[in-house]
Image (cartoon, rainbow, N blue to C red; front, top):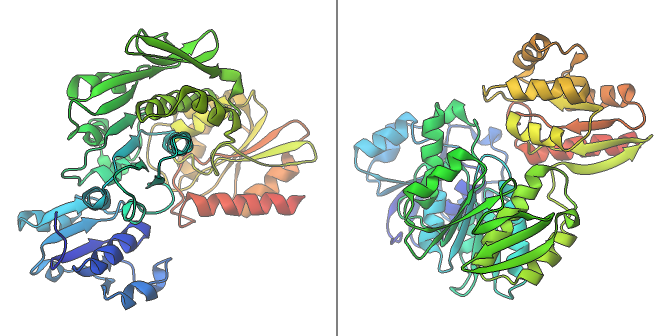
Length: 451
């Protein structure tokens, strides 16, 4: 796809939007970057992108932006259902996501990882495992830098490892990873996708363009993911924490084990994994399968597992103060992710939850809170619905606060030795913070001030 001399509109002045606008302008396109926010509300410095020649259109977005337009590119935060995008489609303007642009610019094969939970841990693990091959490896997508930025200079002999969200998949065209993975599927982002059926079909776009010589790694234990094998042309590798598979990657005799094309490999004991939670066993299984298919040696997979300490903001140990451990799980932006975090602890948790509500079901979440949480501290836009659900489940030790600072202060007063204070919001951060990273860093700074 040729972008030079094209009139391009990029919607969304976030990390991805700024990156793709600047890159395409430098490749000879005529780019407008637009956002409904005014300049003073945007969290990023736009000086450099203006100097590159990109035209800024901030505030109101009128249909005049579509005049003489060749391509419309969406940042992940912009839904294909917004009126301006729908108008562009009606005018036969080609609409695509930022990862589609990255795919068009990329010379290296792509590993693309999606799922409701576990994407960042799995993507990070795969990146570390593939670095052991000696090839050039870049990691991006929904983690760290925008994918368009990461793929610019990598050669065809390297690998791109990309965390991919459902938002990024909405407007792909030719995007086709050499290896794709779907880790799990639970209700999330229903405020945008509306139904589980639409959410699932959007996730399945990750393998829509794959060919028989490509690979698709799927969670055998998740029925909604397992049946995706019926709708792909790619060669499927299953992973399972619960079943010893005849072919795939699984647990046998408490070891990570891989069976593929008539050979069986014992990787290392599960107890060598340092990161907490059964969900991280699943993430590690998936990562091993992906990395093996991409050419990593079994012995090197074991070494990475044994030294991996997890990722920031995902059940991240922060400090131990007065015999109370504090953990930052700010990346838990849905109830299912917070359930997995709670399952990683035996009990006696002081849980800080709440934020922007995605309106997902809270039944399993509040049941586990009743079993494992001594005090529930709620904040943010979701606090009232979470409070009602918890109260209806018979939970009594509920506290409402106005800020993360208030939550940490209260937790430090309530906590007794051997208890755990866990920030696991089960919500997105956008009511109070720019992103979950800012929320997590704020929490960690406040905790460290306690010491």
